[in-house]
Image 1 (cartoon, protein in one colour):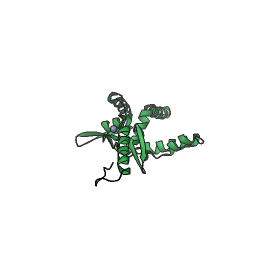
Image 2: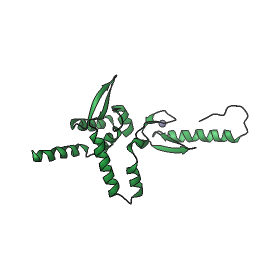
Image 3: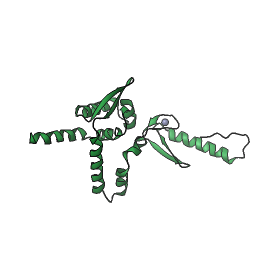
Image 4: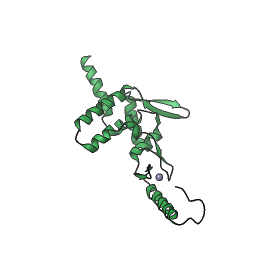
Length: 175
Ligand SMILES: [Zn+2]
């Protein structure tokens, strides 16, 4: 029995011994998500994601809930959040002195989570996995990988040109 306890621990660590699976646990810490939402946030192929989800499910790390017509994944136990916070604190101590990494580690995962909308193609993406980020007039915009940032910049340039000309007509196009 005594040895069994360690084996159970080891099995759980093994299920988590993959960066994508750790990331899935983080994505789920504040919300339930459908497979397609997780897929968009991680940019994984469906087959690949299914495999990760089934490992996590098999080990009781996540479970599913049917909501309306969709199936949603959620963390199976709140202690997973506590455990991951404790590990993160340990990592911050260990990597003290590596400013950038420590900063990343310190970011509350909540800051990564909210899905944002690409202002050009309206795709829902995670700030964490956005292909491009732009700060403009105090706002942060996130873009997909399909070149939407460039389109957005073109729009800005056009509107700046318009703004710098004497107004010929009322109503300046807004972004
Ligand atoms: Zn886009």
